[in-house]
Image (cartoon, rainbow, N blue to C red; front, side):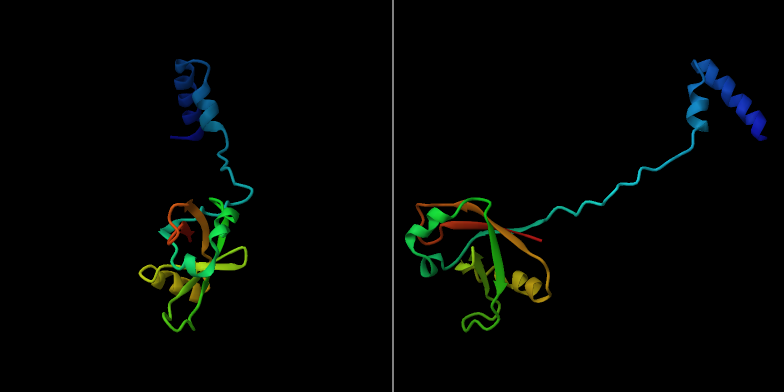
Length: 139
């Protein structure tokens, strides 16, 4: 089918539908929307757990300085004499505990590879002096 024949056929079909909108749509150049900037992917939740050792590193009144969604820093501590895969949890520059030993292998490996992990306080239990802070870790 030649171009003029196709155009007349489409025009007739478009007029049959009313006002030739089909021809205008088909004849319009196709343009793809290009985003100005590609948004960074949302962080993925890796784990949520209660930190270990809080009672050894902070005084009881320290919880008043903590709030849900406050950021935390995770730091590998390969020289730890009890666990070579130990991962320290810091809040505002102060050690507040550790990632529990049964959870720390993955985080120690990711941190040793230079991966960017983020963490935040996800829950505070004032009634539990042993493990009062639950944290969420994101990749």
